[in-house]
Amino acid sequence: MIIQTLSTFPHMYDSVMGESMMKRAQENGIISFEAFDLRDWTYDRHRTTDDYPYGGGAGLVMKCEPVFEAVEDILGFGGASEGGQQRLDGNSARVIFLTPSGRTFDDSYACELAQSSRLLFVCGHYEGMDERVYTLATDMVSLGDYVLTSGELASMVIIDAVVRKLPGVLGAENGADDESFAHGLLEYPQYTRPADFRGMEVPAVLLSGHHANIETWRRQMSLKRTAELRPDLIQQAYDCGDLSSNDILYLKSLSAEP
Ligand code: ADE
Image (cartoon, rainbow, N blue to C red):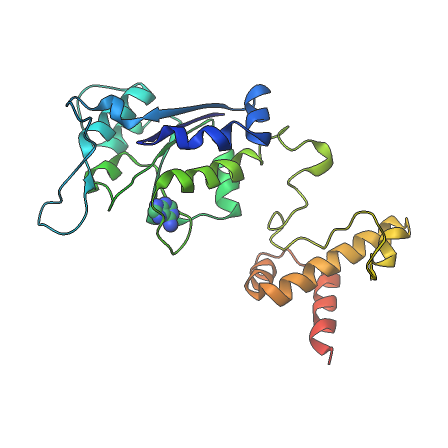
């Protein structure tokens, strides 16, 4: 997968992309990563990427010319401007703008992006971007209902969540398949040695070596934790037909508890 970013602070990616899993994914050829500097598409002495908003108001707005030129250069389609969406036809890249008014990012969105061969993240700063840049977008994504100072941070979260879904990134022993949200539920509790720490004991079933019982216990803990912390996800799993009759019986037994 090719992952590229376009922003005014490309060095913000150095630490996140230069360590641990993200670094290894690049070394193993699973992803290639490149952070572009938007200022490379400016032509004035101050390398200006923002300007005062038409109509007045506080703050500065990111200019559209550098963003258009950069995206066109990076994706390799220059020439006449006829509207971004049209020019993106036939190009498999997802051009992702980070904005609080975008579609909220979640696990299924991460899975969707993980199917793509190329992601280009366009990150804003200041008060926002000239509205016309969004004609270049295939995706507008928000991390949630809060405002960050920079789209770079948001894109790093998304890159991390997407890359760890790619085959070979996590390794067989800790695949992304079993974890929270992968099957619409929160993850069951995990333990490692010692079996007794300050009187807090690991549940006996996990020490039993009885694989079927361990599976049942894990499924039930996952259901219990999700029902307690995220009842909305239980409803969603039910609506999607992801709950077995045993799951439903177990959930009923929980609500019958005093
Ligand atoms: N940029 C600023 N705030 C953001 C958010 N909540 N999600 C994505 N990009 C952002």
